[in-house]
Image 1 (cartoon, rainbow, N blue to C red):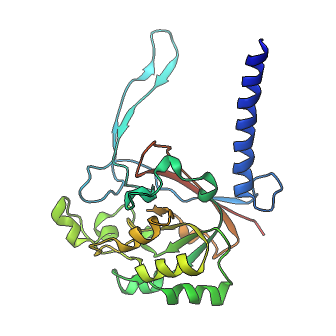
Image 2 (cartoon, rainbow, N blue to C red; image 1 turned 180 degrees about the vertical axis):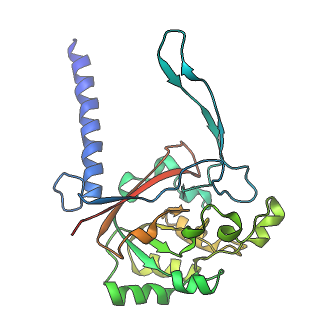
Image 3 (cartoon, rainbow, N blue to C red; image 1 turned 90 degrees about the vertical axis):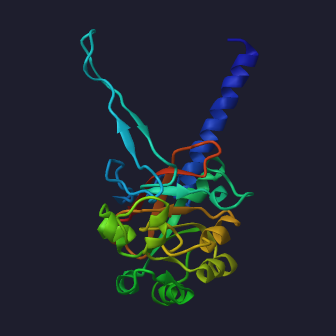
Length: 275
């Protein structure tokens, strides 16, 4: 191999090692160089014909391809799929509501993995489908569980995850199309709480078990706009938040890397230490 060829190989190897090390450090702030051990909890719903999307979207479509034994004698299967960026368990990139915000491929990996907490607001949400998570909810969490960690992935458990995939109970309506948007009723994060988090805490990302970080009756999507102007992405339609403790665990939330994307499918997991 020529010297310039060797130099190029070493350069690419160095970049790959740096990326891998960065991923491990992001999931392992203590710097041991290893992923944290513990129970793994899947925070993503599967994509299929029942996956819930915004009422104006078609949904997830799997187009079956070949499945069987080929003429050469080996088994082979391959399908096609299509869907909107925003549906099922997915991420909203900041550019979704901020012209200057990062697109999906521009979000730093370190922002998508790290220490996480779950703020349980399932009781007030059960009493009011239009509940908006408040600053007082966040302050009550900290009084009970201690301050939010730095660069925290902040998850909110509304309890609506138990309704998946029942559209009527999850969204508040089974209707589809533009007119159905006015019938949406589900909880979200109050804009005042979003501002408080940006001003007083260090948040890497937010997520919850509803279709939107703004509540269903929102007309101006203020919470999206407030967070995304500061490049804080949101995870929506999360699953199994009831299986997580209030704090002391890590989240790894990796989306499809769509260049220029405003969002995309998300495979998110939590790693909960056994002790």
